[in-house]
Length: 567
Image 1 (cartoon, helix red, strand yellow):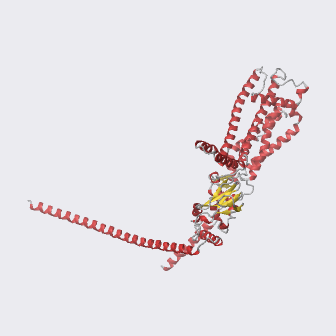
Image 2: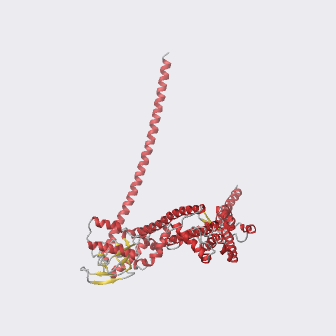
Image 3: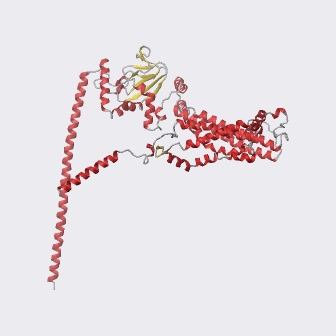
């Protein structure tokens, strides 16, 4: 029996070790695609992928602009045939390389970048993008043997790679610092392509109807002035611009083909005008909404001052303050601007912008990095106008200030005499937000601080600091100790008063602790009483049930006796 018990215990230990070993082993590559080797795999959000997209813009734009031009202006096709063939097949090579790049571009699965080539290939082949890419590279060039080498229209399937162009534009719009300028440039490029295509079709239609047959078509190319290639394209482009913009005098069409062309162009012009107006209004609306989100709404303030008839001098100060914000790009609502970012990302942005300023404050030096990161999010930017008081002597101190830019003066009660000038990276009011015991000035301001010019300050309130320090008790003790050292240097710390306050606080804490102990004992006694009461109630219920059962038995016996005596 003992031998069997020992065998079972050894087996249990061995199984436990194997289980721990299995849990500690890393996942195999075939179970976790994100751990596979990432050689030659492009990250769709990375810089190399974005660079390749911009390279692909060149062949796609080339095909969309040049193929139609060579098909309609045949002279340019004949004159530069060798150049076009070289460029055509260079673009085809880039198209093929783009397909290869897609087979090596990872994708996100459950938030993890998949780098398994087999999975990437399967995902790409199943997508509609692969079908478009395959159609765009089919070798329709073999039709040259049937229609001739001067028929570039056989390469029209190269237009089908347009989705890469739009993808590049979308990514560029999110990466560059001026997206509205890019949107306008993109709109102008679309307009150019439309007019370019229209001018090529106009020249081809003129060739079909007959050059110089009427006033509407292109003049006779037998004329040396109109026979030049540059003149042909410029005239066609100018004529198409007049039609699509409906500006200027256009000769009336004579042939049915000309009427159809004009009708289609007018419809395109109406659609293009609506698109352009919508795009421009969208850009303007975005600019206005951006200004409203970055700067205070001055229209509401102006309406408020008008309704309550604020005096003119105060209106001028408000106007000057608002103009200073917009001209110098000063922000007063950073937290609202960054509120939609994830918390960790918001902390990183705030740290990169303001950590250097906060770390210069003496009482925050040598604090934990996590504490400073919490405090950075609490900083509120404020802008003060020339002559405006930041604080006055005797005011209750509820916040401290850090000077980011500008100069402030410590002035006397008359507002003229200057005792000191505070500049960039200096701070004041830090003692008032710590509630240091023994501070002879209490939490009231001891000086008048006035802005000399426009001053940018960071404000940290007492409530925000208190909320942060509740999670960092050690940092709180360290900050209070630093504050005491500063007060000692300033001769504003009454150590006897501080000792009395500490003693009172300890006495109060002891009383609270005793009350908590007494309360716990009372709760224990109450719980016991409730348990005894419940137990006695249960016993009483059982006795009552037993009595009821005995009474029912007696009643049954009496009834049986009466029935027996009756006969």
